[in-house]
Image (cartoon, rainbow, N blue to C red; front, side):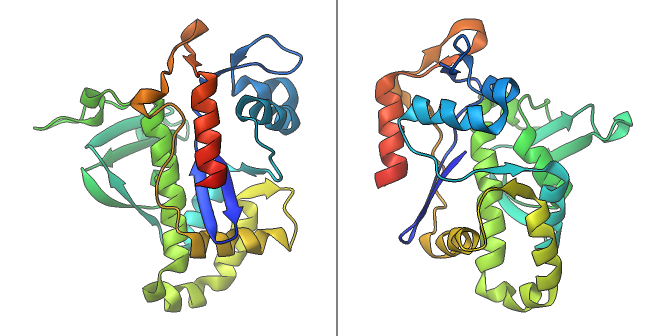
Length: 243
């Protein structure tokens, strides 16, 4: 996920992990493979070449820290477009640290464990009872990227909601302790507050996912990847940088 923050703006662009890309020094393959080949540095270079943008900073999210941060802010609210059921890593009863997710259509309040599970769903399970679940609507990686952005917005909304100022004041030390442990980053003590301020002022509730627009002409690529035309990449970069 790319974030453009500064000057009163806070825009996000998610790149599906299966996007077919040229990875420097490697054969073209799914874009998320760059991290396996060369870590964060190669992932950044790959995305810069892929979209034609300059990336200034990087943050790598830690699952455990992510859960703790969401619990510290009192959970997050997400608006599920469809009923959603899923078993992550075998589900809660598997004994391998998995989790089970059961969301109804509309607004749901999620704790850290559920929010992380919602961010990771790729293949939902059929939900019991009447009505169609997300699996009937062709849930895919685009929905997954939108779910991740919803969780990011949920964190931002918790921290910037005026009605939650008393809670955030009381829990401030806990939030301040958990937030840095949620990710590692090269952002310094001057840059990080600017990012938080941009999130609070700039809004940015809309979710932009590469190839989710029907007219972008994306199609199936080699080995189950997603082929993203140059025109779609340029359009997405323009939306991110210039709004």
